[in-house]
Length: 325
Image 1 (cartoon, rainbow, N blue to C red):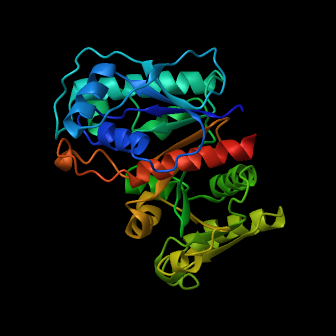
Image 2 (image 1 turned 120 degrees about the vertical axis):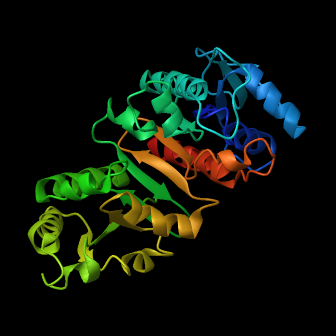
Image 3 (image 1 turned 135 degrees about the vertical axis):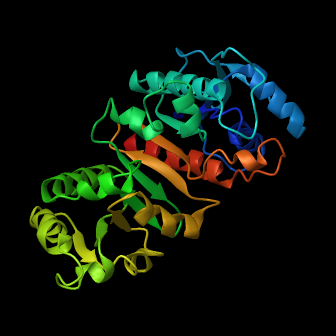
Protein backbone atom coordinates (compact mmCIF):
# COMPACT_ATOMS: atom_id res chain seq x y z
CA UNK A 1 0.00 0.00 0.00
CA UNK A 2 1.29 3.46 -0.90
CA UNK A 3 1.33 5.78 2.09
CA UNK A 4 1.91 9.55 2.32
CA UNK A 5 5.43 10.93 2.60
CA UNK A 6 5.61 13.24 5.62
CA UNK A 7 8.80 15.20 6.20
CA UNK A 8 9.56 16.23 9.79
CA UNK A 9 12.12 18.99 10.40
CA UNK A 10 14.24 18.90 13.54
CA UNK A 11 13.67 22.53 14.56
CA UNK A 12 16.09 24.58 16.64
CA UNK A 13 18.73 22.23 18.11
CA UNK A 14 18.93 24.39 21.24
CA UNK A 15 15.23 24.02 22.03
CA UNK A 16 12.83 21.16 22.66
CA UNK A 17 12.31 20.29 18.98
CA UNK A 18 14.65 17.27 18.86
CA UNK A 19 13.21 15.97 22.14
CA UNK A 20 9.53 16.15 21.23
CA UNK A 21 10.16 14.72 17.76
CA UNK A 22 12.01 11.68 19.05
CA UNK A 23 9.38 11.13 21.74
CA UNK A 24 6.62 11.41 19.13
CA UNK A 25 8.30 8.97 16.71
CA UNK A 26 9.23 6.22 19.17
CA UNK A 27 6.61 6.63 21.86
CA UNK A 28 3.82 4.44 20.47
CA UNK A 29 1.44 7.34 19.90
CA UNK A 30 -0.60 5.78 17.10
CA UNK A 31 0.79 7.89 14.27
CA UNK A 32 -0.83 7.49 10.83
CA UNK A 33 0.67 4.96 8.38
CA UNK A 34 3.25 7.00 6.47
CA UNK A 35 6.81 7.34 5.30
CA UNK A 36 8.02 9.72 8.00
CA UNK A 37 11.27 11.35 6.93
CA UNK A 38 13.26 13.24 9.54
CA UNK A 39 15.27 16.15 8.11
CA UNK A 40 18.20 16.86 10.42
CA UNK A 41 21.78 16.21 11.45
CA UNK A 42 22.34 12.62 12.61
CA UNK A 43 24.85 13.77 15.23
CA UNK A 44 22.26 15.96 16.93
CA UNK A 45 19.66 13.19 16.72
CA UNK A 46 22.01 10.60 18.21
CA UNK A 47 22.99 12.92 21.03
CA UNK A 48 19.37 13.70 21.89
CA UNK A 49 18.35 10.05 21.76
CA UNK A 50 21.21 9.17 24.07
CA UNK A 51 20.30 11.84 26.62
CA UNK A 52 16.68 10.66 26.62
CA UNK A 53 17.59 7.00 26.82
CA UNK A 54 15.67 6.24 23.64
CA UNK A 55 16.59 3.72 20.97
CA UNK A 56 16.07 5.48 17.66
CA UNK A 57 16.86 3.99 14.28
CA UNK A 58 16.01 5.25 10.83
CA UNK A 59 16.85 4.08 7.34
CA UNK A 60 18.38 6.54 4.89
CA UNK A 61 15.70 8.13 2.74
CA UNK A 62 15.92 7.59 -0.98
CA UNK A 63 13.68 10.09 -2.72
CA UNK A 64 13.03 7.70 -5.58
CA UNK A 65 11.18 5.33 -3.25
CA UNK A 66 7.48 5.99 -3.01
CA UNK A 67 5.33 5.38 -0.01
CA UNK A 68 6.85 2.66 2.18
CA UNK A 69 5.70 2.98 5.77
CA UNK A 70 8.53 3.53 8.25
CA UNK A 71 10.87 6.13 9.71
CA UNK A 72 13.66 7.50 7.52
CA UNK A 73 16.43 10.06 7.79
CA UNK A 74 17.33 12.72 5.25
CA UNK A 75 20.77 13.85 6.39
CA UNK A 76 21.10 17.64 6.45
CA UNK A 77 24.50 18.48 7.84
CA UNK A 78 25.24 21.63 9.79
CA UNK A 79 28.62 23.08 10.79
CA UNK A 80 28.49 22.15 14.47
CA UNK A 81 26.87 19.16 16.12
CA UNK A 82 27.02 20.58 19.66
CA UNK A 83 24.82 23.65 19.89
CA UNK A 84 24.00 26.12 22.63
CA UNK A 85 20.97 25.27 24.73
CA UNK A 86 18.54 27.61 26.47
CA UNK A 87 19.07 30.70 24.33
CA UNK A 88 18.92 32.05 20.78
CA UNK A 89 22.06 31.26 18.82
CA UNK A 90 23.10 32.03 15.24
CA UNK A 91 24.37 28.48 14.67
CA UNK A 92 21.06 27.04 15.78
CA UNK A 93 19.19 29.47 13.57
CA UNK A 94 21.26 28.47 10.57
CA UNK A 95 20.83 24.75 11.30
CA UNK A 96 17.08 24.92 11.86
CA UNK A 97 16.65 26.82 8.62
CA UNK A 98 18.76 24.30 6.68
CA UNK A 99 16.55 21.45 7.93
CA UNK A 100 13.38 23.32 7.00
CA UNK A 101 14.69 24.57 3.65
CA UNK A 102 15.58 21.03 2.56
CA UNK A 103 12.15 19.67 3.47
CA UNK A 104 10.33 22.61 1.88
CA UNK A 105 12.30 22.12 -1.36
CA UNK A 106 11.34 18.44 -1.41
CA UNK A 107 7.67 19.31 -0.85
CA UNK A 108 7.71 22.01 -3.51
CA UNK A 109 9.24 19.49 -5.91
CA UNK A 110 6.49 16.95 -5.26
CA UNK A 111 8.77 14.54 -3.35
CA UNK A 112 6.87 15.01 -0.07
CA UNK A 113 3.14 15.16 0.53
CA UNK A 114 3.44 17.06 3.81
CA UNK A 115 5.96 18.67 6.12
CA UNK A 116 5.77 18.91 9.90
CA UNK A 117 8.10 21.56 11.25
CA UNK A 118 9.83 21.50 14.63
CA UNK A 119 9.78 24.80 16.54
CA UNK A 120 12.31 27.45 15.57
CA UNK A 121 13.50 30.67 17.18
CA UNK A 122 12.81 33.88 15.27
CA UNK A 123 15.65 35.50 17.20
CA UNK A 124 18.04 32.74 16.13
CA UNK A 125 16.98 33.16 12.50
CA UNK A 126 17.63 36.89 12.74
CA UNK A 127 21.04 36.29 14.33
CA UNK A 128 21.85 33.94 11.45
CA UNK A 129 21.07 36.73 8.98
CA UNK A 130 17.82 35.23 7.66
CA UNK A 131 15.18 37.70 6.44
CA UNK A 132 12.09 35.63 7.34
CA UNK A 133 10.21 35.80 10.65
CA UNK A 134 9.34 32.12 10.62
CA UNK A 135 8.16 29.14 8.60
CA UNK A 136 5.00 30.78 7.30
CA UNK A 137 6.83 33.91 6.15
CA UNK A 138 9.24 31.75 4.17
CA UNK A 139 6.44 29.73 2.59
CA UNK A 140 4.58 32.92 1.69
CA UNK A 141 7.55 33.94 -0.44
CA UNK A 142 6.62 31.02 -2.73
CA UNK A 143 2.86 30.95 -2.08
CA UNK A 144 1.60 34.48 -1.36
CA UNK A 145 -1.91 33.26 -0.54
CA UNK A 146 -0.79 31.05 2.36
CA UNK A 147 -2.84 31.32 5.57
CA UNK A 148 -1.70 30.63 9.13
CA UNK A 149 -4.31 28.60 11.02
CA UNK A 150 -4.57 26.68 14.30
CA UNK A 151 -6.40 23.43 14.91
CA UNK A 152 -7.46 21.58 18.04
CA UNK A 153 -10.22 19.20 19.01
CA UNK A 154 -12.43 22.03 20.28
CA UNK A 155 -11.34 25.22 18.50
CA UNK A 156 -10.26 26.25 14.99
CA UNK A 157 -8.71 29.66 14.24
CA UNK A 158 -7.22 31.33 11.15
CA UNK A 159 -5.28 34.60 11.13
CA UNK A 160 -5.81 37.46 8.70
CA UNK A 161 -2.31 38.69 9.64
CA UNK A 162 0.27 37.05 11.86
CA UNK A 163 3.86 38.10 12.62
CA UNK A 164 3.50 41.85 12.34
CA UNK A 165 3.81 44.70 14.83
CA UNK A 166 0.31 45.45 16.12
CA UNK A 167 0.14 48.94 14.65
CA UNK A 168 0.99 47.53 11.21
CA UNK A 169 -1.49 44.67 11.57
CA UNK A 170 -4.32 47.06 12.43
CA UNK A 171 -3.49 49.20 9.42
CA UNK A 172 -4.11 46.23 7.10
CA UNK A 173 -7.74 45.78 8.15
CA UNK A 174 -9.29 47.08 4.95
CA UNK A 175 -12.30 45.87 3.00
CA UNK A 176 -10.55 44.58 -0.18
CA UNK A 177 -7.84 42.72 1.73
CA UNK A 178 -10.38 41.15 4.08
CA UNK A 179 -12.58 39.96 1.23
CA UNK A 180 -9.57 38.42 -0.50
CA UNK A 181 -8.68 36.64 2.77
CA UNK A 182 -12.21 35.28 3.19
CA UNK A 183 -12.17 33.93 -0.37
CA UNK A 184 -8.80 32.21 0.10
CA UNK A 185 -9.83 30.80 3.47
CA UNK A 186 -13.06 29.37 2.07
CA UNK A 187 -11.26 27.80 -0.89
CA UNK A 188 -8.55 26.26 1.31
CA UNK A 189 -11.02 24.88 3.86
CA UNK A 190 -13.15 23.44 1.07
CA UNK A 191 -10.27 21.15 0.05
CA UNK A 192 -10.11 19.53 3.50
CA UNK A 193 -12.43 16.60 4.07
CA UNK A 194 -14.46 17.30 7.21
CA UNK A 195 -12.94 20.76 7.50
CA UNK A 196 -14.70 23.92 8.66
CA UNK A 197 -17.55 25.24 6.56
CA UNK A 198 -18.70 28.21 8.64
CA UNK A 199 -16.55 31.24 9.44
CA UNK A 200 -17.07 33.68 12.32
CA UNK A 201 -15.37 37.06 12.06
CA UNK A 202 -14.65 39.02 15.25
CA UNK A 203 -14.78 42.76 15.40
CA UNK A 204 -11.75 44.88 16.10
CA UNK A 205 -13.16 47.11 18.83
CA UNK A 206 -14.93 46.35 22.13
CA UNK A 207 -18.49 45.10 21.53
CA UNK A 208 -17.68 45.03 17.80
CA UNK A 209 -17.77 48.82 17.74
CA UNK A 210 -21.19 49.23 19.39
CA UNK A 211 -22.73 50.57 16.15
CA UNK A 212 -19.90 53.02 15.64
CA UNK A 213 -19.77 54.36 19.19
CA UNK A 214 -16.53 52.53 20.00
CA UNK A 215 -14.88 52.53 16.59
CA UNK A 216 -15.73 52.71 12.90
CA UNK A 217 -13.79 49.74 11.49
CA UNK A 218 -16.70 47.33 11.88
CA UNK A 219 -19.09 49.49 9.84
CA UNK A 220 -16.60 50.79 7.30
CA UNK A 221 -14.30 47.82 6.63
CA UNK A 222 -15.12 44.51 8.34
CA UNK A 223 -18.90 44.38 7.97
CA UNK A 224 -18.92 45.29 4.25
CA UNK A 225 -16.24 42.65 3.53
CA UNK A 226 -18.25 39.99 5.39
CA UNK A 227 -21.41 40.93 3.51
CA UNK A 228 -19.62 40.82 0.15
CA UNK A 229 -18.26 37.35 0.96
CA UNK A 230 -21.72 36.17 2.00
CA UNK A 231 -23.16 37.33 -1.31
CA UNK A 232 -20.54 35.16 -3.05
CA UNK A 233 -21.89 32.10 -1.24
CA UNK A 234 -19.39 31.89 1.61
CA UNK A 235 -20.92 30.81 4.93
CA UNK A 236 -19.61 33.67 7.02
CA UNK A 237 -20.95 36.05 9.65
CA UNK A 238 -19.77 39.01 11.69
CA UNK A 239 -18.36 41.17 12.94
CA UNK A 240 -19.08 39.51 16.29
CA UNK A 241 -17.99 40.91 19.66
CA UNK A 242 -14.39 39.66 19.97
CA UNK A 243 -14.79 38.74 23.65
CA UNK A 244 -17.52 36.15 22.93
CA UNK A 245 -16.93 34.90 19.38
CA UNK A 246 -14.48 32.17 20.41
CA UNK A 247 -16.99 30.80 22.88
CA UNK A 248 -19.50 30.52 20.04
CA UNK A 249 -17.06 28.42 18.01
CA UNK A 250 -15.90 26.20 20.87
CA UNK A 251 -16.72 22.53 20.36
CA UNK A 252 -17.98 23.05 16.80
CA UNK A 253 -15.61 21.32 14.34
CA UNK A 254 -17.40 22.82 11.34
CA UNK A 255 -16.81 26.39 12.57
CA UNK A 256 -13.64 28.49 12.39
CA UNK A 257 -12.90 31.94 13.83
CA UNK A 258 -11.21 34.21 11.26
CA UNK A 259 -9.22 36.38 13.66
CA UNK A 260 -8.00 39.79 12.51
CA UNK A 261 -4.50 39.74 14.01
CA UNK A 262 -2.08 37.41 15.80
CA UNK A 263 -2.93 37.82 19.47
CA UNK A 264 -6.66 38.14 18.93
CA UNK A 265 -6.64 34.56 17.70
CA UNK A 266 -3.72 33.03 19.57
CA UNK A 267 -4.52 34.06 23.15
CA UNK A 268 -7.83 32.14 23.28
CA UNK A 269 -6.47 29.26 21.19
CA UNK A 270 -3.43 28.65 23.39
CA UNK A 271 -5.54 28.99 26.52
CA UNK A 272 -7.73 26.20 25.18
CA UNK A 273 -5.17 23.90 23.53
CA UNK A 274 -1.58 24.82 24.36
CA UNK A 275 -0.44 21.22 24.89
CA UNK A 276 -2.24 19.69 21.91
CA UNK A 277 -2.91 22.47 19.40
CA UNK A 278 -1.46 22.45 15.89
CA UNK A 279 -0.35 25.25 13.58
CA UNK A 280 -1.31 24.50 9.95
CA UNK A 281 -0.50 26.55 6.86
CA UNK A 282 -3.42 26.54 4.42
CA UNK A 283 -3.34 27.37 0.73
CA UNK A 284 -0.24 25.33 -0.15
CA UNK A 285 0.01 22.50 -2.70
CA UNK A 286 1.16 20.26 0.16
CA UNK A 287 0.23 19.98 3.83
CA UNK A 288 2.28 21.82 6.43
CA UNK A 289 1.71 21.54 10.18
CA UNK A 290 3.67 22.32 13.33
CA UNK A 291 3.27 22.27 17.10
CA UNK A 292 1.60 25.46 18.28
CA UNK A 293 4.34 26.17 20.86
CA UNK A 294 7.85 27.52 20.52
CA UNK A 295 11.35 26.32 21.33
CA UNK A 296 10.83 26.37 25.13
CA UNK A 297 14.47 27.21 25.76
CA UNK A 298 13.80 27.26 29.51
CA UNK A 299 13.21 23.50 29.67
CA UNK A 300 15.43 22.33 26.79
CA UNK A 301 17.73 19.46 27.69
CA UNK A 302 15.78 18.46 30.80
CA UNK A 303 13.71 15.66 29.22
CA UNK A 304 10.40 17.12 30.42
CA UNK A 305 8.97 18.46 27.16
CA UNK A 306 5.46 17.28 26.26
CA UNK A 307 5.30 15.76 22.74
CA UNK A 308 1.50 15.89 22.39
CA UNK A 309 1.40 18.91 20.08
CA UNK A 310 4.01 17.29 17.80
CA UNK A 311 2.03 14.03 17.78
CA UNK A 312 -1.12 15.93 16.82
CA UNK A 313 0.79 17.85 14.13
CA UNK A 314 1.85 14.58 12.49
CA UNK A 315 -1.68 13.21 12.76
CA UNK A 316 -3.17 16.35 11.21
CA UNK A 317 -0.63 16.20 8.36
CA UNK A 318 -1.81 12.64 7.73
CA UNK A 319 -5.43 13.78 7.72
CA UNK A 320 -4.71 16.58 5.27
CA UNK A 321 -2.86 14.29 2.89
CA UNK A 322 -5.75 11.82 3.05
CA UNK A 323 -8.11 14.65 2.06
CA UNK A 324 -5.90 15.52 -0.91
CA UNK A 325 -5.60 11.94 -2.22
